[in-house]
Image 1 (cartoon, rainbow, N blue to C red):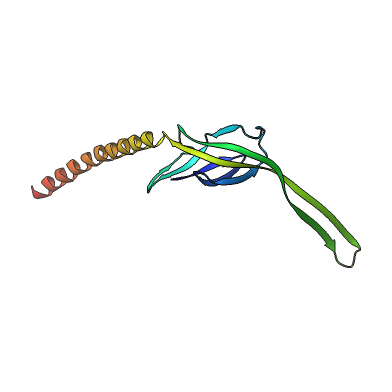
Image 2: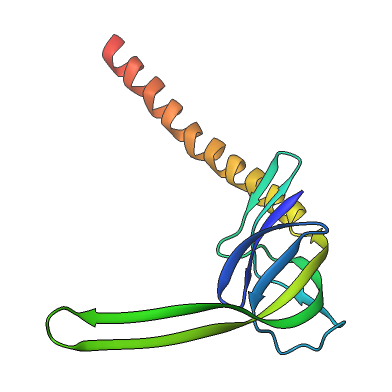
Length: 140
């Protein structure tokens, strides 16, 4: 079972017991956090898509630690002009571990699919009557 969830403006493919580095969260180390913006849910081949998110589905995680990422060097140069700029950046990150994925929204999606199939069957029925009426007109 896996899910695609939006955390701090970025999308991650997560599954149970997976450790993920995300942009810095305001929660304290050791606290639990829940993400409700689940975009896709796969339960052993049964895929549920959200529009844009699945209602009722959520991902629970635990904050392990806050840290800083690797240094990224930004170097700008224009040749033959004597222009050189060197700058560095370290991103603030939070390491989380996914504790569970709840998929209560999957039942709602299945009922929507059944409703869509019912509406297509009623839409096709009048077309068949019109086709039969045309056949009768051509035979006379």
